[in-house]
Image 1: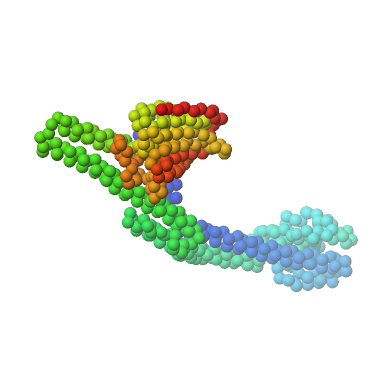
Image 2 (image 1 turned 180 degrees about the vertical axis):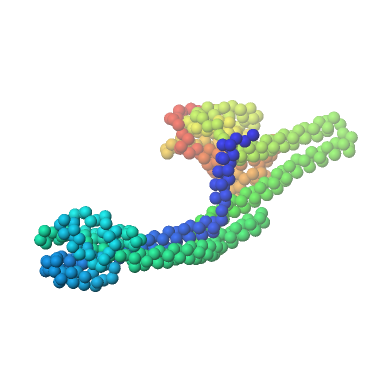
Length: 493
């Protein structure tokens, strides 16, 4: 039974998956539309704020001018005179929507023009304003009649002192700002629709190269691995993808070619011993032969079985080693000990062929001991097959001046032709006439050696001259070296 927490986790995972799997064109459209709306709204908001602030400043300056005019009237005319009332009435009538109120020092109404709702100045009747208060910004006030007023007050030091208040209706400004807000919302709505439509069209148009690349990739198969997509004129953002895909195609083409060649080589190598076994068995069954003849047939078959066993064992090793999770059992190894151990194993074969086997060297390396011994064993076995009696094989371990380690296997055998040298590490490759007295090899020994060195991050190189011998060198990088070497030499005859 699934718990509630588990269900919620699955739902959240599915939601994230849906979000990630959404169309790129759709996401680009949404981001483009969102960015457009944010920019338009921000620009419209700034313009709205500038307009509102500018209108308020103009109204504030207008009220400040009215207060200055009232101060001049108070200085010129007594408050009880007809001239005073006429001037105040005229000042109030100059601009529609202006309210004027003058109070004496006791807070008693001196004049009010025109007759204004008391609610406009109600909350400010008891306030005291210092000289020059008309310089301070006015304050908005929502009157009882629902109108919005800008109220400004000042204290005038004439006689016993007066409080002058002026108010201005801001209904026109509020109507203007409301109309601006409506236009702004309409513009934002229209921009949203246009941004979504235009963004989607632009995104779909710009995503066409991706669709074309996907179509090209979908048409590729094993027979079209030679195709290269980076030759087309791709946008700059898709150029690295096309280049990397071409590199992948090149690796796949190489792998397919190698697999095809490998399959053909296996079929060829297996066909020969199977034909030999089949032919000898049919010959033994169709002809009455002596025990010696049957024994010779069985011995020949046993040799072919051994060759097939070695071939299968080598193929299994290569298949396992090429697995992605293949790991090396790296540990510090004394090269002289490893070389001596492998030479001891091949001593009997060297004695049988009357070949001197010399082991000497110095050094220490971090490597897989089993793989290192297998590589050395393949090199020594190969050298024994191609070294005549009385010859010599030298296995030398050394460290170079840059801290790397090398193992060189040299023989005084028949050597390898210059035309064959580039191919000796290929699987199933054998030079013409390269057959020892004890039978041909599998053609996989040197290929295994090369692969073992690749696993260790090292290299293998070969130098050879016909009838003068061959030297194969295993080079381990300096990063695998641990400590100082010790000199040693062992001659095995």
